[in-house]
Length: 385
Image 1 (cartoon, rainbow, N blue to C red):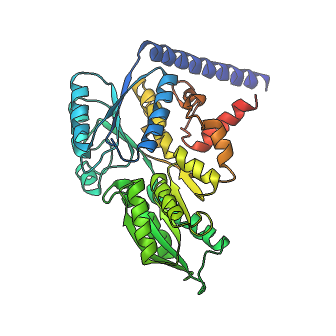
Image 2 (tube, rainbow, N blue to C red):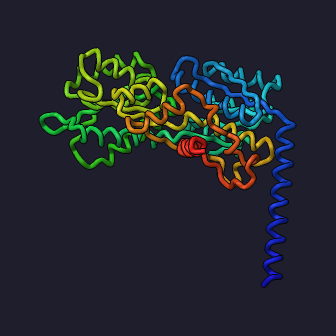
């Protein structure tokens, strides 16, 4: 018995030693090489707040991990040119981008030509382009090593579900017991808009109770003023309108402006909720104008930076996580928004320790934990020390 115990103790100590050696080698390699990540953002004027937050998380992650971050802004045509120029000039070691307006294959052709590891974030290729690319990362384009996407269809579903629940709780029905609802969607053809609309449709297709009347879904291109104008037109067309599904915070703020311009009260006469966790949206939640905001994917840039850091230093996320990763949505409402603002009200993503999420820097980590709940737990642990 004692002999077996000694053997087990010996083997355990050897295994621990091997892990320490492996960790030390990886850390030394990581300290010697300072990589540069390029983020190619095709949104010059649309949904700017969301992308500012995304870039802030990305920068905080690169700071923690000892990497450089270069951000390139352009429209969808300029995005391809910028990537090609950066690759040709050897400005970057890896790339992150969101494809837009069917330009995804051109982006992948550039990274393939220059053998630059790339991860698509937030929204994937169009179905047609995905098929041409082999149906997944690492098929036709070997340098396309993975994608980390928002589950936008689920967010559209959650948004509809939460609004219907609140509308019933707040007794938003008319004299005939009907709740009148419209949707304000993003830009037609945009991947996020399409997926969020599908979630919206899926929820109402399976809704059995006939107390909800969905009148119309219109597109406002993610823009505040356009959403306000669309809302005012819908309110005139459907006088009993009491619930507005808004596909992002910016458009929801436009809806709220429209409600106020009619001398009505948001949160009382008409309710709306949205997606993105923009700071203006969160302020609206705190005021009671916006019922809730769904968010979480704004940290995809930071998480993708962790994946690239580990990949460039020899750990391939495909082995444990696969190549198609999804980020989760969480809801911030009046009960939870105060704590969130206390932690991130000044947009200080540097409070997050992204080093804790890296497998290179934490050799015993078996799986990545990319969720806002993980971040909240990490910060709460720091606060309690």
